[in-house]
Image (cartoon, rainbow over all chains, first blue to last red):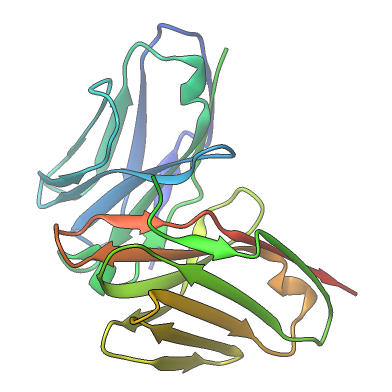
Length: 115
Length: 112
């Protein structure tokens, strides 16, 4: 089985721009979660999607949004980029509807740099 | 804010020694998971322990959970160079759905 894939792997954007990151979960996995990882704040939960519905959301501003498609692929979008949005964005998929009851499989991440 | 806090923040040991990392959390949990991350890459799930379990083993890994103290420990026995990584605990509170909160991590270095 192919693992979780994330595209692109690296991205450089300018302040004020917007960006879309993509995540393809493992085949058969219906839950996709997104995390932001920075040296200062560590790993922070952004949101989780299950069957195209956002089931949970972390404490991030409305500039961060996401969606999930019928094939479980997910995208997250960040609008009006700020320097502080520079981070590693990780996507994780899991088999069941409650990620914490089943192990999450993480993708390699997208390294976003905002200049 | 982070639910779990790992201790120590960094640990350096000789290859072959055992490594112990601790995680403390604040609220009641359904379960606790440990993950490993190699240098800025994706996380790898190591082990999940449920709130009604006290100890779990997986290969060279041993995890304990003390819900009365709101703490967990991860023991890696007979460490190897490949164990060099950051280790995170992750918890899901009893209240709320599937929101997982990660701790700040322990950076483990294995010296040859």
